[in-house]
Amino acid sequence: MSLEKFLHSLGIRHLVCGSCNGCELEMNALAAPQYDISQEGWGVVASPRHADVITVTGPMSEAMRHAAQMTIEAASEPLVVVAVGDCASGDGVWCEAGSAGPGAGRELEASIFVRGCPPSPDALREGLRAAATLLDGRKS
Ligand code: SF4
Image (cartoon, rainbow, N blue to C red; front, side):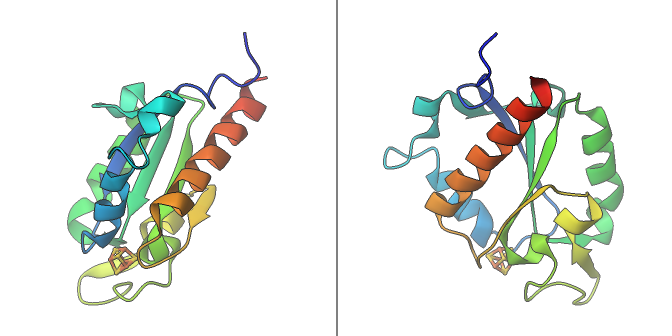
């Protein structure tokens, strides 16, 4: 098997834990023609059971805490959690506001933090590339 399996075949499951939706707009751009991550062999999968990477956005809201934990537990190993944006990384504008808790990436023990409010599609692609490299290292 290639030592770069995940760099060329990455299943991504996205988890919205309490985002304002700004991060999702930039995530959506990854599938648009300008960035088109499908050309790298990457794509969004419908179930965490098929995911190599789970991207998370927002502070962890009370309403999502249990579902988010179940999503992580449903995924198979190896798995890398990527925190998308400043909120998921733990110091965004919505963290600890109202019913919002700390950054979702902090709670879900993310390995990679892509900073920005929101992060650019280029930064997101670099974060996913880092996740794939991490997975390839674990697999080999
Ligand atoms: S990091 Fe910025 S864009 Fe992303 S969820 Fe937080 S406030 Fe919204």
